[in-house]
Image (tube, rainbow, N blue to C red; front, side, top):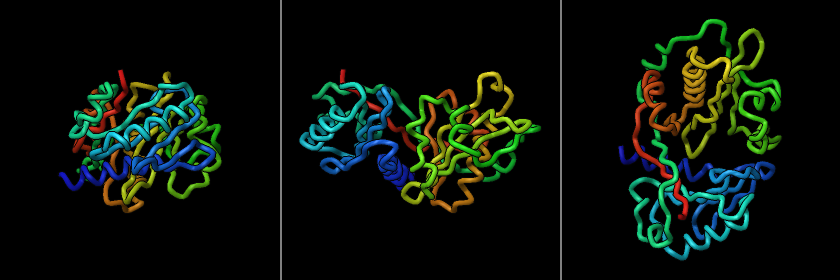
Amino acid sequence: MTDLADLLARAEAARADVPADSGASAVVAGIPCVSHPIDQPWATQAKAMGPVSASALDQATEWLDAHAATRGQWVVTTRTRYAAQPEFIRRGFRPWLELPALVLGSVARLAAAAPVAGLTVGAPDSAEEFLGVYGVELAPLVTPGVLASPTFHLLVGRVDGAAVACAQVRELAGTAYVSGVGVLPEWRDRGIGSAISAAAARYALGLQPRAVWLTAEPHRHRMYGRIGFRPVDTHVLLRPE
């Protein structure tokens, strides 16, 4: 369990490495940092997935302030086991969002996931098709550089040829990370979220990674548990008070 959680922590840190047209990224004093041009705290992050020194943390947060769309609109991501480090506490950092990390542990459950009649899943025809579900405000995450990267795999779920759901798989540090799961409001509560998540997980398995994983708020765990995911760690997004 510890080795797996450590692997996911390394993969989380690797998320900071993005195509240049998607955002700025740098390793600052040993801490991977990323900033997308979106005015949300989660869009600008330092990935402090292990113990950090005061000096390294200060340098990383200076970088975040310099790159965030709005000064102070950023987070530091760490693991629960490190969230109470004195370096965080002394600077007034407190949990803003806790995201348990879940790993695919049962391929049998995934294989048994119920399909949704009429739903087909495949690559989007264009960025616009994907963003029609994902949200046009997230266009900086779906750039030509992302679409051209061999490590990003975008998926859409269609009914009668129209995109109603989306998901993304990204290859990170030997793992496959499932994210960006979304369903149009008028198509929710029909099992489509579970179906596109299962399709993304199956796609991820085909990449032959060491682990297929995702992060999700606790109210989503029942759905992910039904398709074979189980929690192994918790990643915490910290913000200063």
